[in-house]
Length: 312
Image (cartoon, rainbow, N blue to C red; front, side, top):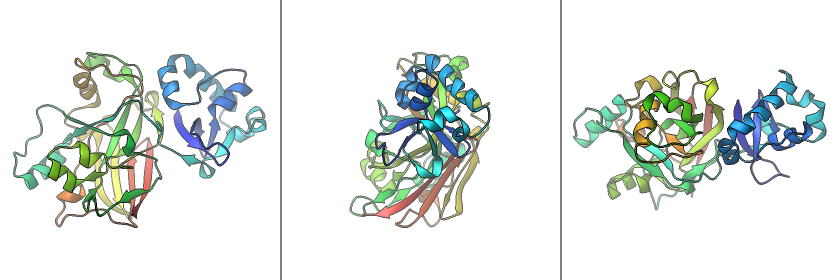
């Protein structure tokens, strides 16, 4: 299933939607039409998914492969919208906690970074974890604002995002994928000059709007193997990153197992699993985003973010 958070002119607060082709149905209204109940917010759905999944499946079954707009019970309540006519927000508009991220989790990215920093080209022995602030959350088609008074080195990083569904602590690697609710696309926008000035990741990774995410969450049952997904990033149509998740140093299973050791993961937690080579600061000469640029970040089987850069 593809699940979104969306708003309209008459519904400014984001609600939960279920996507089918080029339409979505308002889950709350559709469930009422079927005399069922379901959450109208993504975080609530994730935390109650075992109970709510049957309702979502019933909504899909009622459509029976037809467009949602052809289901009279849905259209009469105004539950159906064209994707082109709604505003998609980040799938989780306001997570409960910071986004957990990994640094240097692709070997070629670790090598390109080491070459610039004068360090060993070998990858890290343990995952490098950091977080992005909640105020960095941006939508799949939102603008990325650049303030030259703050940073002149805004960079891109396409990443596979993992959404935790079943919480836990000390999760075994072999059980890790059973704790995944779904997957999304993340662009870990980074202010490289701030990263260098402050000698750590948080500030340079957490500028407002620096975490475009979406366009939806694809539930885990639709992704057979998260380590076999192509991911790419383009700036103004020119490919800058092109790799696959099988190049990760630490797999999704390993990330969850290592992160959860002594640290409880909760439903709705978001993990950005790292980026491949091709980032701007490692190019010769270095390249950074500028006003007017259009950045497209894509992960196979999930979807594409398309964000325009705007100067302040």
